[in-house]
Structures are given as C-alpha cells and as structure tokens.
Amino acid sequence: MKFLFSLLFLSLNFSSFFYYTIARGGERSSNYSGFMSSSYLGSARHLFEENHFQKLDKLAHGYMTNYDLEKAITAFGRRCANISRIYSIGKSVEGVPLWVMEISDKPGEEEVEPAFKFIGNVHGDEPVGRELLLLLANWLCDNYKKDSLATLIIDNVHLHILPSMNPDGFSLRRRGNANNIDLNRDFPDQFFPMNDNLDSRQPETKAVMSWLKRIRFTASASLHGGALVANYPWDGTQDKRKIYYACPDDDTFRFMASVYSRSHYNMSLSEEFQGGITNGASWYPIYGGMQDWNYIHAGCFELTLEISDNKWPAANELPTLWEFNKMSMLNLVASLVKTGIHGKIFSSDCGRPLHASVAIKGINSTIKASHAFADYHRMLAPGQRYEVIATMPGYKSKNTCVLLGEEAMTVDFILDPEIASNGNLLKSGCDCSLNNKSRFKLVEFLPGPHWEVSLILVSILVFLCFLFKRRVIFNHSKQRQLVGPKRSVVI
Image (cartoon, rainbow, N blue to C red; front, side, top):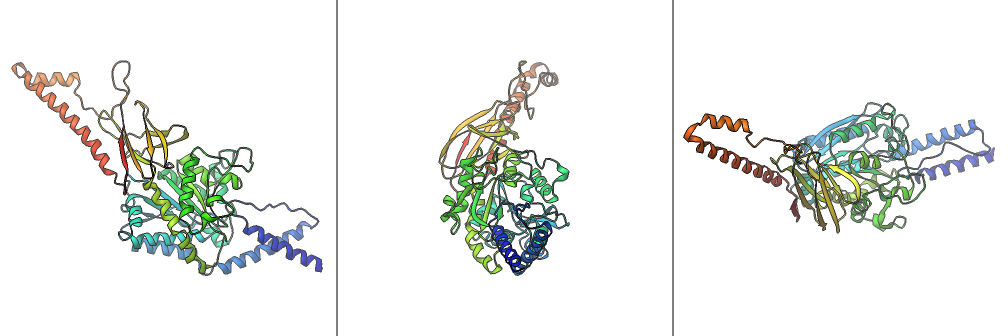
C-alpha cells in the first residue's frame, strides 16, 4: 500500500510539472503505459483534476470573473464613449457573450486606416491576457491627447480587443472550452484535412472566423502563457517534423516579433529563444492553429505571444506583468502606421477607387484594397528594396520599386483601363465623355450658325470632367494622415 501511495504522489507531481511546461500547444497524451489498471489510472487522473482545479481556483482570487469582466468592459464603454464601441462577435458554448472593445477616434466608422486585433484567454487556463488587455484599453483612454503614442494609435488605427475568447474554459479552470476542445487546434489547417466541416467547429472558433470576414484586419496578436517568447508562422510542417519552416513573409514576421520582444522588459534576453522570438514549427509543430489561418485566409499578420512563464501567476503579479508588456503591446500596434507601405488605388478614367490587389515580387502573399476607399496597408520589414505590384481585372497592372526605410511609405497607384479590340474601354467607373448621339442632340438643339457655341460647350464639359477627376484623386490622397515622416509615391 505504501508503494502505491508513493507512486500516486510521484505521478501527480510529474503530471503537474508536465502541465506547466505546456505553452501554446503541447498536448498531454491520454495513452498511459505500464502495469497500473485502467480503473486505477482513471481514479488517479480524476484526483489530479480535482487537485489541479482547486489549486487554480485559489490562484483565481484577484482575477476578474466572467461577470466582473463584462462589467469592466461595460464600464470602459461608458467612461470612454468618445473613443470606443462595445460589441459582441458571438457567444461561447455556455452562451457567454464574446465582448470586443473597439478603440478609435471614430469607432464603428470605416476609415482609411489599418485595423489591429488583440485576443486574450484563447486557452481557459491562461488568464493573464484578459487582465492585461483591460489595462491596455483603460491606459489608452486615460492617455489620449496626453501621450503621443496613445494619440498616434487612437487617431490612426482601429484597435479591436477581445479580452476572452474562451470564457467557459476560464470558469472551468482548464485549457479547452466547455466541450473540452482546444480552440487553438480548431481552425482549418493548410497541411492536413482537419476542421474543414463548419458544423463541427466550436462556436468560439466560428465567431472569430466570421469576425475576420466582416473586418479587414492588417495584423493581430493572441496572448498566451507558459513561456516568454513571440511566436510567428508557420506553426506546422508538411511532414510534422520539428524544423524552421518559414512562411512567405518570414522577414516581416521576424520584424514584428522583434518589435514586441525588444520592447519587453526581458523577453529579448531569453536564453532559450534567440532574441526572444521563434518560428512556431521550429519550437514545436501544431496544427489547426489560429495564427496560420489568419495569415492564409484573411491576409492578417498574426503573432502568438507568450507573455508569462507561469500560465496562471498569482494576481499580485499582474501589475508587474503589465509593466513588462505595456510598451510591447503599444509598439506592436503603432508599427502598423510607423512602418510598411500604405496607399490607395484609383482608376485613371475618372478617379474612382479600385478594389485592387497588391503583391510584392518574390513574396507569395497578396492583400486586397478596401471596397469603400481602395486603401491598402502592407506590413513589410524595413531596410529592404521591394517591387510593389497593383493589379485589377480589366486594368493594366502597374509596378514600382521602393526602398523602404525605417518609416512608413505611401505608394498610391492610378491604373489605366485596358482597351478592347474594338477600341472601347473594358472597364469604366463613370462616363465623362459625350457619345455621338449626345453630341448630335446638342448640335441639333443649337443649329445653324450656333455650332461654334456647341463646340465650346463640349470643350468646357470635357475640361470640367478632367478637373473633377484630378480633384477626386487629390481628395483621396489628402484623407490619409499618418503621424511621423514618410515618403509618398504616385504610380
């Protein structure tokens, strides 16, 4: 009997140790080997779960409950109504709303600005992110028009904050949701046919995927715990090997991860991860992750940020963790407007905005300009030369080479419609010219000696149309107001 109790004690301690080594994706195996019976293992596992829940329940004192979190979000919305909008993207398995705080000088309005999202508490037992994201929102509100970085972000970025993607898991003090599904394994995967059935996905996963269809996010980050590192794609490999597996925008992701790591109190000093950053597949491969899905299917450059060595630290450590991560969070969001290339795409025939595609030669990744304003925002690593290409069906593509420095650069495109074999334009957003029938009616209306007058009127109309076209392009160009030095190019 003594032997059995000793063995149970050792197994519990080993399980606890193994649990805390799991960060963004390690999975405990459900297959046990050895001489112990399945009934004994079942009771041991049940005892471990009870003890583990009790331990986390004690640690939860000082953390916001789901009810507290909702009250805090509502209070923020009331206090900071001039720069915020509160909305829900859906509900959890247990029906808890997934609340989002949008922070901007014009919340809820579509503008010529990039959008960034933070997601916390993807795993229910990693609650630090939900606390820090509330602190971030309130800091921005308190420092708007007082601090230059807060003002830069609010005036030039639409920031969306989802403090808890997994409120049910938080209440249950476990990694998975109410169905015990790891939400960071529930997205469609590029390498293996998994999670392709919409009906089988979790409601929290569906909510995030629908969210990205409604809002065109330029970049994002999810906050996790269990390590201290900024993780970037790819998260998996084709053959499941643990190797560095670079995505097309590897340089850009390394830059973004370094922005966070270098701004952190001690992340960049890591002895385990050089510079405090890591390629996901090089660390350990995972499949069905949210990070890769964002990049592939939504053109959203997402990082997975491990912000605390301890998954669930005591609540009295939260102020320190906030101070360690504050500048990293702010600088990552600000990098959307401080670096990269930004611009709009117009049609040369009448100056209308075009929902065109923007590609970088040599990088197999394309983003789209918006429908409303045809603005685009492309994250790129600074200090390199890039060939930027704008394309649109029915228009001649255009390209230009830029040497991107440390500051953001504006690159606008004016595309010419292609000419069909009969001489007509293949695409035209407006009709500024008078066709033959219209001209005939005008001359008929002013017959005889007044034909000169009709000719003058036609000339005036054409000239006014030209001025209108230039004015539209000029006004569109003026709408973009990025803070800090930048170069502008019109192609």
